[in-house]
Amino acid sequence: MDYYDKKTIPAPQMEHHVKMTNRRLLEIDGVKEVDSFDSEEFLLQTVMGYLVIRGDNLQMKNLDVEAGHVSIKGKIFELSYLDEQHGRKLKGCLASFLNDIKHAVHHHDIYDIIRYLSGSELLYF
Image (tube, rainbow, N blue to C red):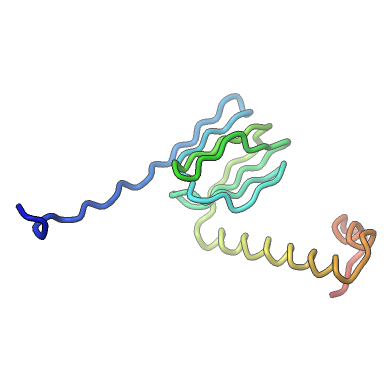
């Protein structure tokens, strides 16, 4: 068989595994991208769709983008998958919210922003 007879063999799809230990440690494989995270919520794009992790005092313990591995520690409350459509909508809402905050910073003082974020007063843009 010469070079032209060889068929290209597709790269194997990354597998997706989620391992939780005592609701305090998550080991996740098959992660394509960490879209956003804070101490209460992570949004991960996995090979099986978007994964939302909610909890308290969440921290990224390990991140290996090339291997698609993420470790998260903290008190885990919820794991939920979103389909592609919901993931795009969630990212759009987050981007819109951050844009509103950026706009507020340029046009208002910090006390207005805190009142806006706490819901006690509306800012008009």
